[in-house]
Image (cartoon, rainbow, N blue to C red; front, side, top):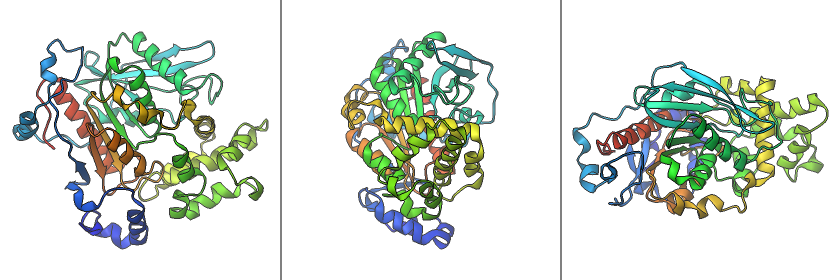
Length: 404
């Protein structure tokens, strides 16, 4: 199958050198093995008669996904793929999770619906009102929260007592505070990292998982994006500003060099490093750079939390005991109904990580969006995320799984 059959003629005309170069870099099997589906590629895996253990349902037999159900859902309406309308939260507050930290949380949608928790990216990115739009507000009880130091949570941009394991404990404290027995987990980018780590720590509290832009927080991923190994070759213009802040004598590790500046005693030094760090990521988030997204780098409050917390986690290797920790613990969540959505031309979280997760976890549905980068707001990615939630909704309602 030729690349031109999966990417629009307009994109080929405007960006063919980039796309052809990226296609040669993609660490996947031959495109001839993919089944195209609108803007995504679907990797089919053998069906299992495993009963997925969602203990909140009294009749667990409803969660047996059979081949007949998979093949017989054509009679159902086609899955919704467009974002839901904007909604406002009906409840919000702050939860004190330690002597130092308080996290902002909110709920929207159906107060009596099936709970879903949204895990934002970064770390340090915070939530946004648009995050609510991936979920059916009539079915889902939508929970958003800002992780330690991010968004509205306090203290702002604080690195003290801020680790992956602290965040996992915070998620559990929030679940208990809201009196939620178990919930669906949704996360993209760093949110996919945290979703995997949380679900592996508390699999009995998770009813389903939707992941986007897979990030396993390994050295090769950090080198790809921050050390000039991969993304810089595709976006050399954006890379220059990120690179040029650091003297040549310190360029053996940009993460370390930025760590020094983001933790400087001089606030303006922190801000300048935060602006450049944030703008580099924002310029590479979309398949075609989005200048409005890049302007987030000019928002000093956002940029400081985003850059400082990201760099803190990356410097500490995610606080995981080993590089392969998340892949090594897939067996703990293998039984959970999961969809993985990945943009093929994701510069921030290259597809190699999603592919390795897919190979380790073939039971999870794997959707590759052919004409997308990293952002959840890319049209093809947003469509697949909404569809993934719709499929889980069908399972939870006992109507089976919709056909691909």
